[in-house]
Image 1 (tube, rainbow, N blue to C red):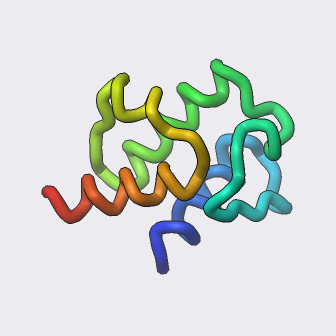
Image 2 (cartoon, rainbow, N blue to C red):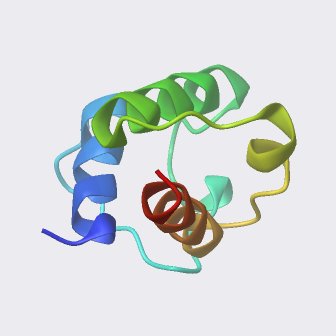
Length: 79
């Protein structure tokens, strides 16, 4: 399963919506309920799913899902 497929499952779990489809250009504006609180829940869920940790600087620099996927892949490769 690709990083994007795994990440999509995390999004579906966090936002409790099996219909969510994410792409590289997806942002918080595209997902109903993606606010600051759910963003924290998303970050925690992604860290758990991929067994990685993010810094505040890394997560604050994310502009879209594509950036998120690149960050996850870089973290996995750097393990």
